[in-house]
Image (tube, rainbow, N blue to C red; front, side):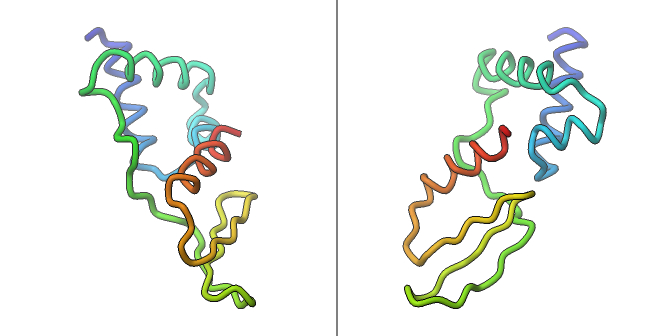
Length: 104
């Protein structure tokens, strides 16, 4: 692996651990978002040792109980977005939604 790949591999690992969206991570560190996404894709295509797991535990910045008529629920705020979840929500759907919001 060349030095540029190693550099981007370490940046992507740092992003994985940061809990930040790709956009915010790159903005705070003054990285090009398009370069970040290019290298993330390239390293994921390089082999399983560079791939992120499909599901990973994340730290949510804000979780608060929500009073309502449909039983217990949780409100999750990620950046400027807030998602309200009822008991029994689909974890896979939530993951896809968070991926979508993160990419904005």
